Image (cartoon, rainbow, N blue to C red; front, side, top):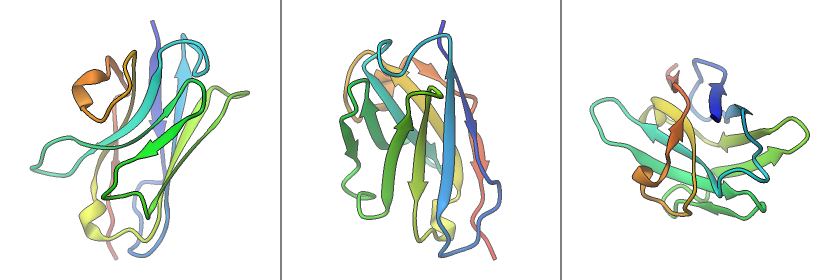
Length: 123
């Protein structure tokens, strides 16, 4: 069974770039499951889909975050990455990486999730 693990910097200051890594085991990001995505949940709010990279490398980001979001991958390490630039306190959230067999922006499409990593943006 595929397992995902997020890793990241912890606290981030406003205006900085947030960088997260998702390390995948038990499956390949190029052959198993179609969509590998990033999803976040701000405190007290619902899940927000941020973007996805498919197994063939196609990338789509949420229109609301597209100007600040970059998604990439390293197939040799079976990892994919999220960068979010110009962060503000409103970007404080638990960030998840997830995968699923279907491509889309609904978090319910993603069957396997990492445990999540808390990112706090503050001075």
